[in-house]
Image (cartoon, rainbow, N blue to C red; front, side, top):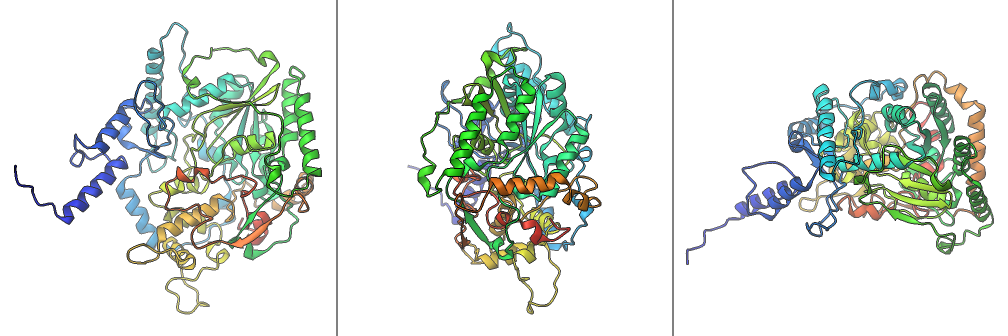
Length: 607
């Protein structure tokens, strides 16, 4: 028997590092071995993944990996609909880390908070979305798949050939997810485009508007969701902005958890969380507006009286409910038929289809991740029928739900369209999974230059000996001060865990507790006009009527625990926090600070 070669601790450490890098998908031929399980899994994934070609595979980072159950012909691949983004180079990550340590943060003016959609998406450019190529029933499945893959590679080549990686935003490189969008658009009679009211321009691709209203000839309803997280004047300003630039839109204001904007403000609530009890989903603001928009679109071709009766029952139940506890959440009601369409996106649906077939209107819900598509469906149904999460990519395939016998809802996975947005803004918008960000510090700096994070969180500069003295802040200083305040320490050396602190700050921003809102062009000059606008007053009254602070809701405030309970355990994988619902009645979005209207707290020009 040959003598075993000595294996040092240093070699073992290097072996583990190589294994981690292979698991993360880093392509390094010198470090990957042909008989390693990690390397074979990666090769198998690249062989079975039909969404990426050879030209862009090495630039793609695949997120939210799930353990596979086998690779047989009939086995389900849980990674089929993973988020596929362009990978940042190591040099770029290191450069941003140095900038986070060295660059002093300076507050930006209110004009820089104004976003123009023409600068973000550049209508008419190659910043489009992939269209399904023409096909016929004579084509086999293999021919159809090959044609779609070839068309998708041409689409990616045009975008990456026209813009550099530094200018481009994160956008979806997974063809399987785009196929879900194609299927939803083909089967829909009405399309709902859901956006986040804090930054609707980020979630509104003009190319989709032109395609739906032009080529498909369908009605498009823009849903400004989460209006409870934005000032009423800003909501009205965004509504008129979209009406002016896109006249064919039907605009609906929606929130699953309305609040009364006239509630007294408490600056200390930024460090507190709020729990809501009782009938959470039945208090949604916007179902009646959405019904009126659908009635105007269908023009009597579909009987929507059952939907109106359901809304009346939900309002009556929320008005007379005792809000006593969790038994209301399990209230027996009309059954909601849920259909999971896992492989339907691969099946031909026909170039043309009958509108309002069998007297049923199909409403497709599309939009970016984390804008509240699944929460909107729960709000329409009146109780939780679909899982929701703050983790982007939680909805992996489209599903259909019968709201009433004549109304069918279709929930599409979130899709990121290509744009010229800063990637830091995309992170703050909840588009990128926070737990898997390689470098979160520049996003914290982007946030701190637009809202006074260190003031709101009562942070003390790490190098300050005198608390009353003024010290320049950088993004790293804010993360280190927050780690010191929260008690985040590394395991071995017990140093301040700045990475965990940065993730915690980003989660507060995504949840709306550190509120960052963007404005339409010209909002700063006309702010007084929008605040005195009749629709602003109407929205304030409507939120106060739908979301009373009486028997409907019971709020409990308590300090955030230092064990990172509110942040969802940053050390866990992003998929493991998928069970942490973003919009459930027991943990509403925008709790704490947002529940008390943070925009008055932030001041005139900081929200």
